[in-house]
Image 1 (cartoon, helix red, strand yellow):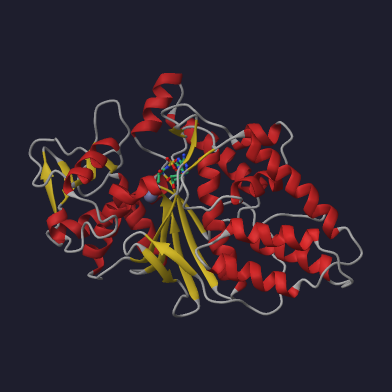
Image 2 (cartoon, helix red, strand yellow; image 1 turned 135 degrees about the vertical axis):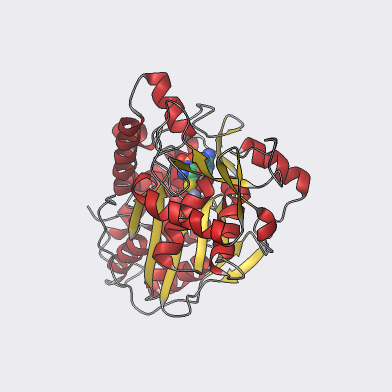
Length: 407
Ligand code: 5CA
Ligand code: ZN
């Protein structure tokens, strides 16, 4: 499916230190400089049954910062993002509202594109819906069957975690936690007939009244993890630099999509780093469509919030931090945007090269945006005589933080 429009990025002078990000599987920082100059990134996309909320926005901004850093280092970025445009929540929402599931998916995906465009999030190279990828997903299921990593339960096809020697190494959780999270996040650990409670669905035989697509396994639809696995493998190859998403995707989703990829390709590990953003909450709960405690990006923007202010509000906290959204954060973002704009409208300022080096250094250490924002604050508060500085600060804030200061 089509992505959203690209943004022209200013080129900045020089380059910074190589990039390190926190990897869930090792629990530490890892270098994510791509070996061959091309960075390969897969970030899980939305399930389009409701509008983009601030939790989504925060997560996509984190990976946008990662992409901006790679581009700043002169790498090419191959980036896949999916749309889970067929899944149980979408069918349930469509039934509840008396709509066609396709219409809900199309409308909410379009709204998401608009929100990402407004927020100046760089588009993925490939934006792929599950529905349009049905054939490739079915082929991967066949491959896993051929490799002896799949079996059938009453006509539904399951992936066997026993076939994946490194299963469990992404999230590093104990058995009880894996069982609990599997039940909470779309798995079916209690289904009779499975070889292991953590085995996951690869292909669901078509149910009466539900959509299905033809496949060698019979008509049906894919399990969740194998969708992301197929889309990533077919566009990025057997080994990627970063697999990304919110922390609620570490288990079971990324654990199982990595396990499936490793079995299908014979590689030891699918991603070099598994990177997870913290959860944004409201009133003490994770912001989620099912809980209904949402602040929508589109509503804020329609109400006159400037995209740059929203970006600054979300980037003011570290991406890995679980956090509560408050109106005060938006007010701080707005005030910061006003301050920064006033500062770059001056005829001269303090030399900006040290600021550029500092921002690059902060972002190269696990995307430390709070630190980067503070450094820009300090430059804005200082006086100086360098007439080239305001333009360089405008350019670096645009290229690295995605905020447009010039109007
Ligand atoms: N379609 C699947 C991934 S294949 C999915 O999880 N969709 S989603 O719409 O539920 O979430 C999209 C992205 O936003 C995921 O990376 C998810 O981890 C992230 N996300 C969801 N809720 C929050 C939240 N409250 N805070 C931060 N990130 C969130
Ligand atoms: Zn995914």
